[in-house]
Length: 355
Image (cartoon, rainbow, N blue to C red; front, top):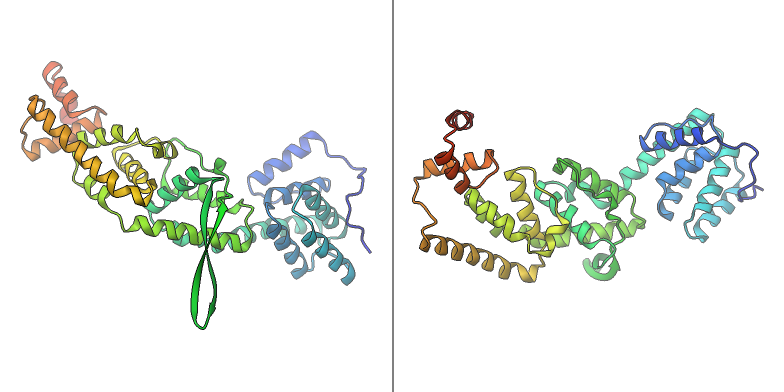
């Protein structure tokens, strides 16, 4: 029978060979297993984050007859994996078994590990129902910000209990949101596609069990359902002028939720940040926030009018003024000042004729 312990190895990888395999794994390339067994260990370490991951690899090894083992050896290894908490030692021990008892050649073993990793990741994303969670831009933006806000915090996870007499019951369990927000980093462009990719990595490398993955998915869907019924902020932004948008973005800086969003790269993106902040605000506070938000803007408009800070301008002219302000990244008031003091008509005509 095989002894499932890490034995001392005579072959030692050089620093350059170890660095090479790390780069291969990071780039999701097939690993060259002509290097020492540390390579297999490194490959598993980058793919396995929970016991369910290691068991997935083990079951795939059995299904594809990767290992040359007797029945009692298989039973002993499986018991060893199931009865011990996930650790680098267990991963190292399984790597040792693969290195010594694989029936495939080294290249095929490498392809098996890469194929199994991809299959595991696909299954995890399917458990999370990623297509449903990320099927629209607003939802992706909200989920990206929600995880950043609630990572490692206690949340109420939703589990559906098995139907009894045809009735499915809901059970809420208070648990830590065991997702690492290190995968959700702000980039220069911060497109929704980039946010979705980051969300997928965050979920893939979660230490959750299969049941935990489904509970997280239920939790996200339940939380999002509250937002999907809310469109007050979107309606306000759809009808607002550029100067309103600038004021709104400055006003929203006072909210704690802003730190979980991103720096906007365009006018459209600025609107997305405002909606994301609104979506992050607790449901019980949303009505109070939007009412105060509208009221504050109305008060500001009224005060400006009383001071003579407003001009009556036709809509067609106002549209062009907004475009000039947006393209020059300034306020409508600044554009008017520039028109009076500089009168750079060539620049102005270039902007207006670009429509």
